[in-house]
Structure formats: C-alpha cells, structure tokens
Image (cartoon, rainbow, N blue to C red; front, side):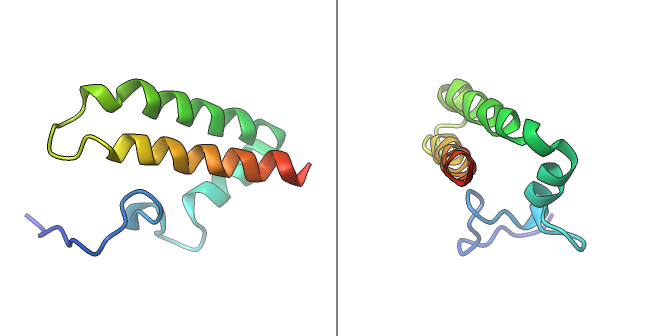
Length: 80
C-alpha cells in the first residue's frame, strides 16, 4: 500500500484530480457548460451533508472540501 504524504493538499489540490492533460474540474466545466454551477452547488451540499459521518481522524476535511466548492461557485457567479 502506498504511503500517504503529509504534504499533499487533499482539499485544494488532490493529486488524483490532476491526471492527464486537463484537471478534472476544468473537464467537468467544459462538459457541463452553464450546468457547471449546479454541479458546484451539489458538491457543496454533498460535503456539508457527509462531514459528520466521516472518520473522527479528520472531521474537518469534508467541511474544507465544501468550502472549496463554494469558493469555486462564488468565482463562477462573479464571472457572470
């Protein structure tokens, strides 16, 4: 099993989202177009719902992920 590095930012730059030529969020935005905002909203809801059910070893990680998607949503709305 691979060792997990303490220096990896699993909230803002998860390494598994940056494989290939395009980052996963950029690809999703390209595919969804105007629907991308709804994807971001859904991601916020998902992480806000599940944080309390996650491992007690890192209870804030899902809250931070929710904040990440909320910040992305705010950026998208401000660009309109």
